[in-house]
Each structure stands twice: as C-alpha cells, then as structure tokens.
Image 1 (cartoon, rainbow, N blue to C red):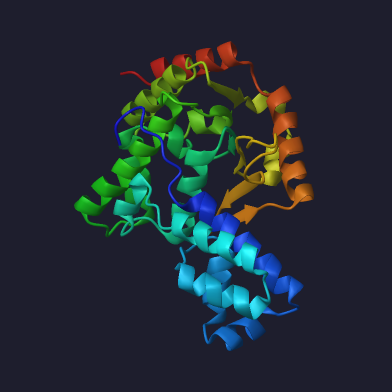
Image 2 (cartoon, rainbow, N blue to C red; image 1 turned 180 degrees about the horizontal axis):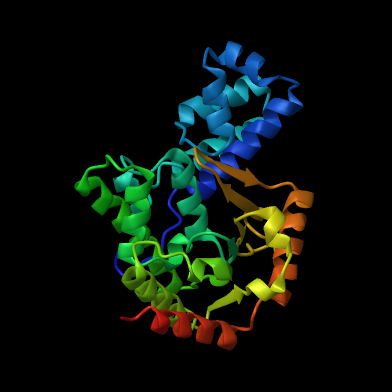
Length: 296
C-alpha cells in the first residue's frame, strides 16, 4: 500500500450493522438459535454477522429486519449500510493468508484514532522489521512455504504505513517489557536491527514508546498480559463513531471486548503502566544501548 493511503475497508460498517441486527433480534426476544431456525441459516452465520466478521447483501438484511419486526425506515437504512460492508480494504487481497479475526482487527486498526498497546513478550506488528516478522511467522508454522511467508510479511509491513500516512495518522502509545530487548528473536543481528527500528519510530510526533524496566517489579501488565486498546474518531455529533475496543490475541483467535467496564479496566491498567515505564527519551536510549551491545 503506498504511503499516505488510508482506508477503513468494510470493518466499521460491518460491526455497526452487526450491532444493529443483534439489538433488533434481542428486542424481538429471539435467541440466536430461534433466529437461525426462522431464517434457515446456521447459528454460526448469525454469530458471524453480529460480530462484524462478514458482509451482507441488502436482500439478506431486508429478510432479517422483516423477521425481527424492524420499522420500514430502519430497514431501508440498514440495507444501505449493508452496501457499505462490501467495500474492500487493501488487505482483503491477502485473504488467503489472513484469518477472519485478524481481518477484523486490521480494519479497526486502520480506522482508529488512538491505540494503546502493551506487549510483554514480542515486538508489536506495527513496529516489526521484515526479518523479525519473518522469524516469528516461520516459528509459528515451520512447514510454511516461502511464498506464503513473503505474503504475510508484506501484510505486516503494509500495516505500518498508517503511522506515517498524510491524513490523520493515529496516536500510538506503546509500553514494551524490557524482556523484549533481551529475547534474541532471529539472533543478535536481527534483534539489534529491530531495536534500532523501534528507536527510529519513537521519534515520530504521533508515536511514544516506553520501556517497562525490570526494576519496576510487579506491574499491571504482569496480570493483564498483552493487549491493544483502540479508540475511534468522533463523528458529527461529538461522539466516537465506534465504541472503544480492547483486542486480546490468543493462539487460535482473538477477543474483542467492548463492554464499558472491560474497556475501563484495560485503560486503567495501561495508564498505570504508562506512569511506571521509563520516559520516552530514556526508553530510546535503552533501545539504542541494547542494540549497540549486540553488535559484533
């Protein structure tokens, strides 16, 4: 994707449509099973629609709204929204190497105005070098073909363009555990280049990366584990167009948390870590010093 390009793809309208349809189903007092039976669909399909994981035809939305008893004006509005779910983001051409849960996340990442990220074990994808990413992808699947590795690496590198895009680049705040500076992913040379890359990104005006030193002892991230909090731009009413979301990635999928208290807990944890971590300049020095110590 060329630098400066920006697109939110279909993720946001898919999620909006899914929430409206879920609310309508609940108002109609229909369980997912009951709705699936009446629509002659699988329960999994209903879940995917309501989770924003799939686009919809206007015709399907009309049928759902009819069964849920939605008023005509809302039905027409949701049918229009369904057309927007067909929009394709740049990453959709890599659908063969991107799982559905990551497809959703990349769209949210593109749409976010602010990202708070904590990582305890590995460098986040938005900061990885090609060789560091290649090492991780190979480790996840030792039997993977080189061509597929190249495509996955390309997706990861293309995602990073949002940090320097011309129009409204997001504010990125990151806390990295100091252990990441000492885990030789790909060997000393790859790690040294990776740490130098993080130090360079930390000079961008919209990016602040802090290192959580070992000396901080027990902190909120020890119990929370890695996560990302995403917040989205305000719309014409002065309210965010999308609710804030917490993304927690696992071995076989990801969790998207949207309940107010869930988001608040993760934001409180991040704020506490932000206060405990080394300041930006001190963190940059830690990164550079560690990179130099790895040089032969």
